[in-house]
Length: 549
Image 1 (tube, rainbow, N blue to C red):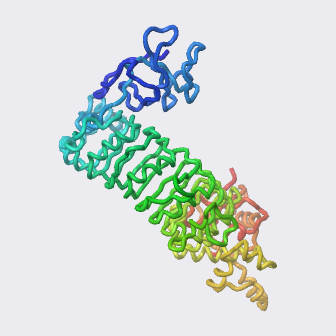
Image 2: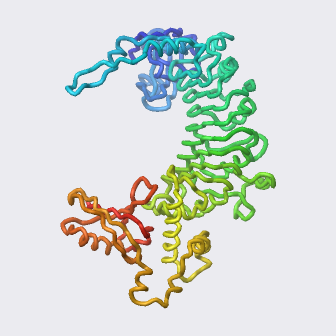
């Protein structure tokens, strides 16, 4: 049995008797507003006197799984996430203004001030004095001037008496209520109604009720953050009439698998929505994402860390179309017409067809593909220059700007790479490399056969590429970079032998990396039999020469 001692805290009042707690209620431990759990049992525990409250803690901060001495009282989420607590050691939370008072009127305790120090050169503690502390504290204490308030993890559970919030903080524009005990949408409505200037509301890490009925229309709210709240798309649909002018909606970490509109297969409404964040969910089928394609003002769609394996665009030539695809293909509005940013990093995309289909999105300029198999040469994917060449309009790839120079070099390298591999089947080349012919013509690149009249040194020069070799092996020491002209068909194994000669490093075994502009990490050239052009090495490329461990 947990030994629960009441600890002091300026906002630690609000504890209840056992009979006041109800099943499913969220509570925090008295004196620790970050230790939050859900009531799963209220009553007697065999072998102990009085009432106890069985709590399933959110951060695995318990003693057992809901059973004690062989008796099961409830089922916890994990083997050690639950404990039994005396009622007086639990709090059901506080009104918003009480938390506000504590947050902005409360003075630093002596212990807190003693913990504010830096270490001097002689390893002695030097206290930190905050310049203008009193002035800042005085400004924050004038609640009627506050425009932004952070009340994260302060045990807020209700709005409080009507009229008081508006009278106290009438100018508030941004309110962060992350990690509190809010669950009832009526309390959220009570808070928002009294804040007519409120634009941004963050309710992350509050487990919200499934009952969204009765929410009023809140025209002034523009940004809503509901990360890790357990919300379903059904609740989102119910909320959209209450938030008609919302421009940003963040729904990270809610275990969403499906987009389930009420009246059709396509999501309608949200006429002002510009950004939708569905990161860190369980969405696997691209058909679910296509249900969002008629959101007319949607500019940014964040889908990082889901389970998506394939992307396609709903045009009439598509080999597979979702149900009621005619609704997606309305004459007046193309699918994802205004989408400019699509972030699909850390998914399961591994096919080039998914990359090529991104060209069909009318205005897509900013794309994230990192941490997908297709973007990782080490997992059978392609390097950055291939992605740039295949994506005709991309201006930002994986968070890095694509400069005109990088685009030109990438496209030329890509064309030469395709030419080195595809010789006899133009139809197959067109199918596998849709932009090849276009890029080849645009950059004026001739087939090698066209230069067949060349002989001797002239013919050899046509197939040479200029590369820079940089030796970065720690045991060798600093060496000046070398620029060499080599045949594009030079194998990686042959280049390693040449590097041993160039840098006089007979004593070590070299390892080669291709350093690309815009890529955070260089690409390992790990196949000695492959030619350097197979890895995308082209004119102006930089090869790093490292040593094997």
